[in-house]
Image (cartoon, rainbow, N blue to C red; front, top):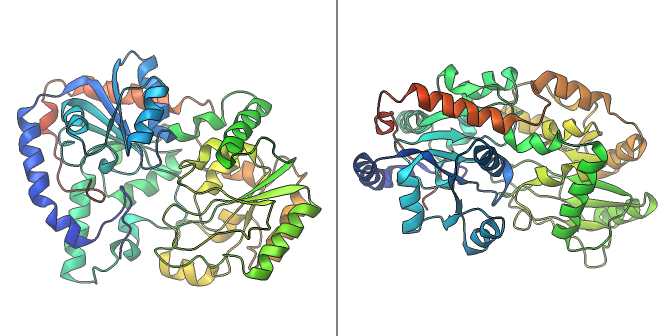
Length: 426
């Protein structure tokens, strides 16, 4: 089965069955006029991420009619408490707000707002990271149960039709933009190296201010009043529906707790939101903590709290590199995974050090590098992939959107070529 997050590749049957609903939505949006001063925002991660950063930038620019499309009532309440008008995804009011909006902003796909009434809007797709592993059109893994042949060619065609609705896809830098253009199959001019709004907070303020703010968010998410001196984050990537090979065994859970005690540290486990593996620390564990995506959807908000990151092939490595702190890699199945999925760069460039095959190996690396700041490899990754370090990417995205809308005033928004779904039904 293919990925079913709101911005991913959905099963071909779901895609085909949704065509009548999309057609109906297109007819509705053909009649209802759009207003370029009305913007809607949403994220599969919840109230936050790059969508919220872009919303705030739009408000600074004078866009007063903004609406956050929430996944549920709890998220809507969080938005309202923050002073942001909000409607629940799939509701009539949310559909109406999307149908009237001149601009829609999402982090995972059109289903972050409303996939049926988005036709004709200027659609800003904020992707969630610089890809290391191949994604979308660049890997057959994206098409799951669609075997090679006519069916997969149909899926690829449908996917290209759906990504054709993207008006702007910001990238961290030109190197990342080149990869995203191919993976999404959209014209080069729509992918711009404007920086990623989701990482703006990692550049703003002093290092101490960023760390203190992130530690406050992390403490609240873990429901604790105090955090230890050292914090280590483990954040693996999605394994295409397969179990994560680094899930600790019973003995390893004990080893992790002992290591944390010896190093006056906590190890915070943040499984991928689509992970099928159970990361459940034993009841006796006091220093190994689980940070589920249901508690904190966007991990970017807490990255500056951590002294080190452990990951495998996740793009979170590129984000964490902005902190200048050490990154370590744990991948027992490195050769097998990369052979099936493929990668855009070499593992040597991505990891910068030997990839650990066991928890014992990676924890030894972490302990040895605690006080190595800044990490030379993190600095190198930032230099390779990040074109902006001013914390103003969201502002650049808004300015680019306004410039594009101004240039398009001669023709109605509804005339933009948009077809096909992107994400699971809402």
